[in-house]
Amino acid sequence: MTAPTGLTTGLGFELLKTEGAARRGRLTTAHGSVETPAFMPVGTVGTVKGMLPGSVKETGAQILLGNTYHLMLRPTAERVAQFGGLHRFMNWNGPILTDSGGFQVMSLSELRTLDEDGVTFKSHLDGRRHHLTPERSMRIQHLLDSNVTMCLDECTPFPATHEVAEKSMRLSMRWARRSRDAFVERPGYGLFGIVQGGVYPDLRAESVEALTGIGFDGYAVGGLAVGEGQQTMFDVLDFTTPLMPADRPRYLMGVGRPSDLIGAVRRGIDMFDCVMPTRSGRTGQAFVRRGVLNMRNARHAHDTRPLDEDCRCPACRDYTRGYLHHLFRAGEMLGPMLLTWHNLTYYQDLMAELRRAIEEGCFERRAAELEAGLALGDLPAVSDPLNVPVVPEESSSVPVDL
View 1 (tube, one colour):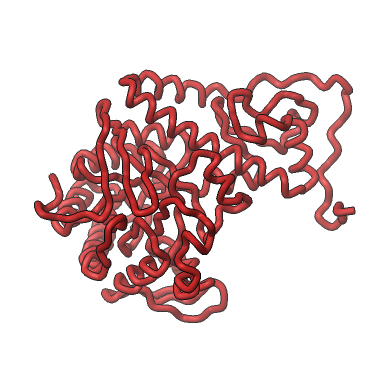
View 2 (cartoon, helix red, strand yellow):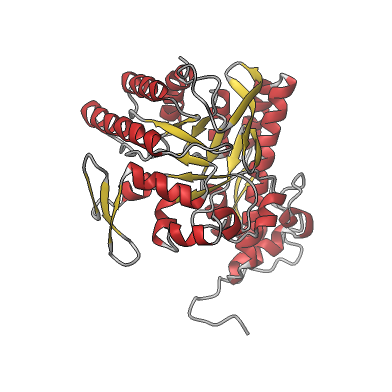
């Protein structure tokens, strides 16, 4: 199934190499190119938490995600436009994708009402009422100067009956048509449609057919990573991605863990975003080639080894596990900053490794090796040469900034 003939796209997408369903491509925008498969760090309100834009770029990130819902409330899209758009406002000169705000609005179950026209909701900031329609979402994302705009959709809840998922999906398809009509075409900018339909193959197929009939610059798979579990997510991708146009980028929204990324690339996905590497970094969790580490654990207190000896980030290059453990136990902000930098670097290095494996024709072998590594768990703990018990964490009521 392909997009209608004669569709002009403001984005360039070139499929460079495939191995099975895995794809190596290149997305071209007005603010630069993105090598795919690609992971987008989340900069919800115009910043990747704890990171300078230059630091984000050093991790290898090529494109960031911003959020329509949060930016429309504060500082407002109009204010961002006054500063020349989100790129200038946040000092990021690379591509930006903005989600439509639909997921955040739908999560406000007690603060919003939904109808054919759009969704009315109360701001979580001040309680003021707002009305978001497909046309308004397109206008906001235009003011933000987003390179990749997302259609407004309803994120179907999980679990949902076939009847509920069908009604939700068809509303999203009508909103997709209105989003397409309201979108302003210009070179280097594009609009993605979002495939919905819950866990039901017939609904996912109907959604893909509706979206390709309208014609978009790229296609996202929405409504996943909402509690269905990894295997169910993979099952949905197994019957959905083969139906999606091969000549357009494919984006899996809100995913995920490293094993999710590997499995989804295996199934033909090109683009990802998730708060996991940044949020986990702020809470002391580090993603490494052998799985996930909790840097608050006492086993790290006396460990002079780096977090990951094969990692190029400052946390691994310049500091020990013992020091990172100390920062988190002491509540110092440098700990979350360093671990965020590390996690983003790990994610970008993982995507680069997957791109290289597809190019070299060894994706399945390398993916299996990466998955086996993630299952190993951390290196064996080392003994404490001083045999000193770990001091409990500081109470939040005791000042430590002396």
